[in-house]
Structure formats: C-alpha cells, structure tokens
Length: 512
Image (cartoon, rainbow, N blue to C red; front, side, top):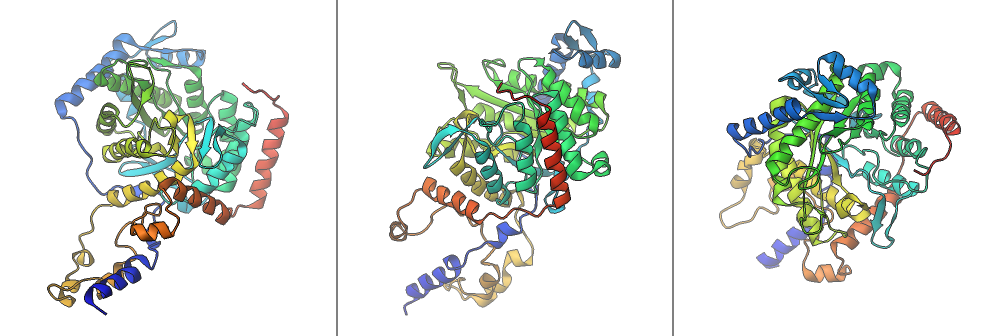
C-alpha cells in the first residue's frame, strides 16, 4: 500500500471511523469561562453611559403602572413618586443593587444539572415565547402542547443546552388561563434541567412557585433558587404590574427574576445605539433595585435585548453591528455593577434555517459569548424575529453552542497539549495519524460537529446529498425516537398532578 493510501486508510480509521462522542457526553451542566472578556469600550465611554443611565433615573424617571403596592414600596424607600412616575435620588439604584448576588446557583431536580449563574459562568437556554413552530415537513403552524413536550424532550438530550426555559413555544391548543400548568409540568417531567416559571399574571407566577415548592420541598426552596421568572420592561421607561408583581412573587419567595428591556432602536428607544444601551441599563437597574426592596439578596439577572430595525419598514433586524456592539458593552456595564447578565442569543430575522439565519445567529451569538452574558435565553431555536421556533434550528444552534463551549474552555497548555512524546515518535516528514499521542487523544482532540458534513462530495452524494436542514430534521427525529424520560419520584409526580388538577378545576377556561 502506498504512503498516500495508508494516510487515507488511517484517516478513515482514526479520524472518521470512530465517533468522538466523549467530549459532548462529559460536558458540564454549564460553562466555566476560561478566556478573557472582549472589552469594547474604554473607561471614558463606560462612564458616559452610566451617567446617562443615572440621568434617566434621576431626572426623567420611570413609570410604574398598575401596581399600587409597587408605588408604596418605592415611596417608603425614599424615591420621589408623583402619580405613577418614579425618580430615584443619585446613587440609590446602585446602592440597592449591591445586595444582588454576584453569582448564584439554580438547582435542577437532577443535582448534576444545576447551573451557576453569574461570575465566570455562562448558561445557554432555549428560545422563549414564539407562538409558531416550524419544521421541514410540517411547515409553519401554531404551536401545540405536543410541540412543547417534543421540544423539551429534544432540549433535554442536547448537552450544550443547559436550561430549558419555559415557553419554547406557546401551546396554543390549551386555554391561556391554564397553559402555564401544562408548560411547567412538561419541563419538570420530561427533563431534569433547570427551568423558568410563568409571569403573565400574578396568580400564574404564584402557581409556578407553588409547583416548584411541591417538586423541591419547602426547606430546599427556602434556602435555594429553584425557579426564576423572566420579564420585560415596556420600553421606553415603563414598568407594568406584570414585572412588579412577578418580582413580589418570585423574589418574595427567595427565587430569581430576570428583567430585560426589549428595545428596538428607533421605536422603543432612540435611534442611536449609545442612548438605547443607557436606557436599557436604567430600566433594568431600576427593576433590580426594586427586587432588593422586596427581598434583599434575592437573585436577579440584569437583562438587555437591544435590536436594530429597518427604518424603511419598521421590521426588527438581528445580527447587525449595532446590537452586536451592545452585547459587548452591556457585558462591561453589568460586570462594573457586579450583577449577573442576560443578553443576546442565536437571533435572526430569517424565516428558515438558511444562510441568513446562520450568519445572523453566528454574529449575534459570538458577541454574546465574548461579551460575557451569564444567562443566554434564545440560545437555540429562534426564527422569524422570535415569532417561530424551528425544530431544525434548535438542533443546528445546539451544535454550534457546543463549539462555543469548547472555545470558552480555553486552550490547554499542559504536557499532553504540547505533545512532546508525539515529536519523539514521529520522524521529520512523517505523519501523526497513527502515533500513540494521536491514538490517546483522537476521540476528544477536536469538537465533533454532528450536523456538519465534512466528507468528500462523493461520500456526500452516496448518502443522499442532504443539506443542513435535512440533516437537522433527521437529527431531532432521532432524538425523539431515542428519548427516555429521566427518572422521577412517583409520589412527587402524583403530588404535582393533584396540584395541577385542583388548580385547573378552580380556574375557568380563557383564551386571552
């Protein structure tokens, strides 16, 4: 056999013939960042943005509407409250935010899947909120409870998704007044990763906290974060009762709250990116300060969702340079404030998991990762500006999240990484394919992108000439076929079912 033929045979044997699963199978439940942050702005620029945020809180103020209790809490704390407008004395918000934990752990029902949020930890969670789903064969349609359960089952099996969130899609076939029970139960039963709770109404937030209490027990919940709510301010400069009531329910029980202003530049914020970043900081800081008035030390994640928009059509755009810059900068501002951060994700305006989706999601996610977001909602599955969850997009994004996870782990520089034994074994002009060092490392040396096809065109044609979407379609279907539910204490499961049945019997069906 010629040297070239031996090389090809070894490549098939060592590089292709054995799947390198181990790197993904032993992936931690969250990422412990080992690389530096990308510092986009210098001190002068960061101070200017902080001063702008302080000016908004002191001189302009935020509206807190619909919740008299929130206004009472602010007034007792020393804020200037006039009607529903709340202004804070200089430094008040920052002082209150000092009791926000720099990092905390959200427990999962499987302790191995608990995640740390804050510090150098980074957590990837599913897309949140789309009313529609899309897949290669079924097309675009309203989401159902079956879709939600399927998506939870898929996410549960993807190691690079650390947190399943809640509304991976809206189950539009279940009454609005009751669907939070079914959504939360699906996350609890079909996965054992951490999850979020409902926030759309105070009673639904309370139901979520109560279900978590049934699952984890009173004592565990009293001393740990086991559930969080995710809320948005109504930008510009409006905090409604959904936010303040969720804060009172979740933080009042010692649980976590994420608050993310949703700002489309030119619509919910000024057209200039700097002003929108400062506005997002002011809005999120005031919500964070409020949570600490409810319960000092309650977990809080400062959020930022800043997107550009087409000033011709009004449509949001994603992966553009302006929101990419905001991902970097808000990371710097959150670290200066000393609080955990939520931002970014695999965002795209594309309707399909195509080249546009790949490019926009990659730019958005790369800046999210390098900027240091601790909790990344919408890390996988986002399509159509957040209106649709893509089955194929979910697994495609997860494949790339695994690659980011490797990068964030840093470059090993130990004896094995320097590979001196390989140089001692392989002569000049030789090759390393069959040497002992390669044999010891080939399963874990490089990230194995499951959905990338790197074979020759002839091999690709022999296997059906499948594009990325078709490979992703087969991947998620295989995951559903292979799915096995994680074990769960039957008594706890029964208690949850009884709680849900009782509460549902007390609530009339409502579809709005």
